[in-house]
Length: 130
Image (cartoon, rainbow, N blue to C red; front, side):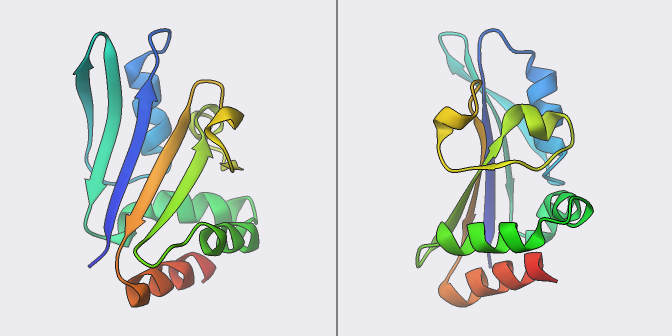
């Protein structure tokens, strides 16, 4: 079974509800705002099903970037996980913008980690390709 973890840091100048909206635009699972201390917070969601990423799949389809998303998934795949970084402000606006480095999103990225075995990760790539 796959495990989906979605996280986005809430910077001190940001509204936590807006960051939560950015995450909800790409993730359909339960989302919490976690206090980390010293005014640091993170918006986080965890799900045991790839269906929780259906909003992300729909964005890729709407923007006609499925091939780019598939290549990105393959590029950042290891034997046990796939890590995606998305531009947070674009996610808030309902757009899909894949980034290669956290530096490409000034307020920090939305990070998606998909954990599973090799067969499960292959199914994830197929899920986003169809």
